[in-house]
Length: 267
Length: 328
Image: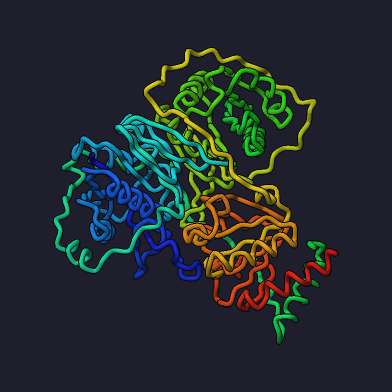
């Protein structure tokens, strides 16, 4: 059974607001020397795939990314936790592709490396915060899909998932092949790789594709239509001033805080 | 004349508050472009009985499709009906509230209709002197805002609690349009098997006037009890950051943030929470935010009204006792 985990290599979402800047020309974040990481929700998807492989025989995991050359780091990380193979669709420019474009590229690649039984995506990427690619990819491949799952099992080639919703958890079944998007849960925090495996991962072959290899043109994916135009990107106005409660002892601080909350009729 | 269509979100057969927020957003926009607001009400038998409620919140047309097979949320079925309504009305915009179902349906419908798709919008307006719809959406975990221009046919999801519903007015009327469409056979697709209700005894995050929330800085599951005790004393709900969920200290339903619950209580007390943008996106609408953190550089202080720079262990027990005195 072939499982593909779609991954995005992104500007570290933990980057503090004080260090974050915009590059107005490109209408995206200023990259500078900031770290890039594997998107945290894709880590959850990867962990879920690894657990499936432990429970079930003959599961092969392919880590797939569409990104610039440096996105290879995230693929190496996946190989380090023992994904079986890695596929890199190399993006030639540093300009972001919109969700339709990304789904189109991933779909073309999956058709090339397929057939595939299960596609797993993080519920959204921590840079553009959209959460669209998974669903669009399912549509592009006409697959059944379930979003925001927190666990998964496969019995007799049927997929059974738990989906977190308002007020509870839905349990759903689907035939395979299918696509799921994964949300964070205690059970799917990505494991830490063994040093030995990380070293091995660095020597592994990564299969590379260009867009031409996949018969997708730049114009196919450039502004394919998520919106008419990205007009601007700006930092939100930060007009909040925090009053730090001073005091020699903790007790004083507590009293001062409560006095202020009472004065504002909050308590 | 252009129409703005709103998908009516439901939970347990009842229309959600988020639907009214989306109708409010649609109506304000429609009023400035001389458009109308329609709402798609898709559900089990008798769901049409709730159409008047949509009217009272500002829908001028309600497209009703009721069928026993639509009672449970089945994305494939709902998409089928919604696409039919979309094709009949050719709306300028189709709005979903960004709850779990809306987030799932919106991109798939956009794909099937060839419309644009932007998610998690926090503001909508018309550009001066044009009929362009401007969309504001937070990116990079809320560290920046992107402004996009909508396509002539555009699907959007709206972040919860970012748009005010209109004042309810029962004298408002809506034209009811029945939608008759043959439902597809989806026996080979995704099937709902069961629903496990959240086991829950305390105050719900969504309804709480006060929330006490803990993060990575709390340190352990055991120590998280301090948060729960303070919450109980304050008659508050308990929340958490993503880090506390991933550590297994609290269930995922406690998570406040962009991908957790979006809350806006009168008082939000953040304890041992660094204040990742992801988290701030879920609680920055709170009327008053108090941050307790030993790191004076924690981003949470940028969002808070009052801050205490101190190890929470030195603050929480005393705070709990003082609150007890005040409230007794």
